[in-house]
Image (cartoon, rainbow, N blue to C red):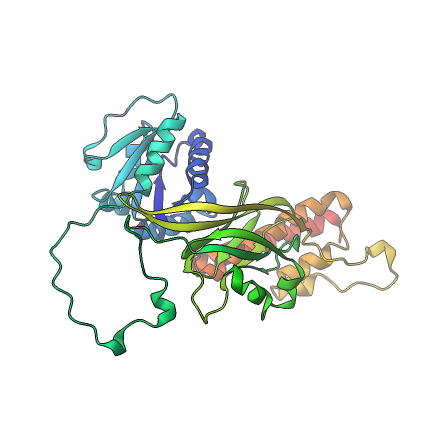
Length: 396
């Protein structure tokens, strides 16, 4: 999947919704991984660190044009962007904007009217395209000794038809397991397995009990190389989704069993969300290179339960609950929040939920290593201060 860094005028708050809508439209067309900071909320320093890393890994830059965009090139923060503009980039012109006189820094970048379906299709095709390698005369291949020939089961996956595209691999079965209900702040496993029809009986072999409980099956058409994505349909980012497997993997290699894709899902806060599972055949098309075709698109409605622990209400028990203060003093913020849930009025529980969501987001950012120790300390102190104010307001 081609990685595209999306650059836009970040100081223009009114532009964010249009940029997000454009990125979603391009993502829905398939084949692109859009690197957009709006999908990675956080403190400015963390967002800048993410952008620098994403920009370094991107194959191409998509600029969403606005008259103030050249300001993104100003100052030290624009250095990485200026250094990358010598590579491939495209310019999207939103509806209502005129075709821009492009700055010299953009060189020969092409622009596309992204406010129309035709313009979006053209932009999508342009971003999918990869630069052609200059042809070179290949030296004659040396004779391959018989001992170095590929194994028979691998040799079956190698031939191409006369048109240059890999032949289809027939029909197969897919197993997918995604829990329908989750609790915020808890990490869950999800998995997808694909096998050719003759090997479908092995789809459940070695599958863990939790995955087996939620497993569903379906039939699909196979190519020799398949790709799987799991994402949220909406942009509210209710989940942190980590793909643990290589997105594109071969299917049907004799002796290897079903091909598996693993994911970790961590709900960040209570609510409902639609997770979209996309299974795609990866095809090599003459003159177009690698292309993906959807063979299964499945939506699952996920309910995320409250983070609040089911403590008895203080007025419902005669047994005194432990004090909150020792937990706070020890830095056990999550335990303190769960205990406080039993002591605050119902009207204040939403505020506590927000604090628990912030704590879960902080813990996830710490796991990713995108925050400095100073940033972690600052956010923990802010959470501590808010928690103490909530305790005082509740009289707990």
